[in-house]
Length: 231
Image (cartoon, rainbow, N blue to C red; front, side, top):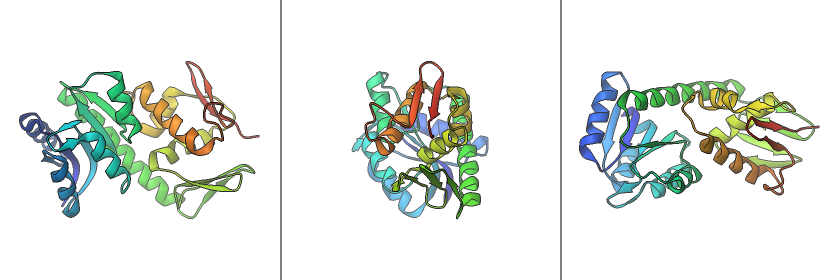
């Protein structure tokens, strides 16, 4: 079966309540309680988005996220009672798209999920339209058909969100792109935190830059945003 959302959380009461609330608003949602159940569920079913707790009885959400990222690019939003910045950074670094702290407000969480689902639909539509097309510069080429970049002759494979972020910077190349614009065009969500954007920028730099700590292409304008420098 095809679901909009899969909740992976061992807090059964909370996850069932969340699923019932989402289903009321036409976001079809299923629930599993463990790492093993998650992978077993995805063998026979499809989910557009995953809400993932960190503490699971047979493992961690970090492990689940890393494994999922090897095979698929669907949005993964962590939901956890763990409050530390370190947990947030680990969650985003291992492939999470956002981090929602428990206890969460059901209506706010639903809004986040809906925005991500809409953004996913728009991204898939854009990628389909761009299939076979390229955006070219003497230094950098973006290939929408393969979600890759060719930088100075070197092909670099990107994940969907990384490609969307680089594509946004490319469309505004050599000009400052404010954080708010990146949030809107890449995530379509004003709820996202700076740490989410910073982690994705860092991942792009690690793939594109010879020295990520001294970036040649993706420059930071502190307190404002970023720009892609292509001469």
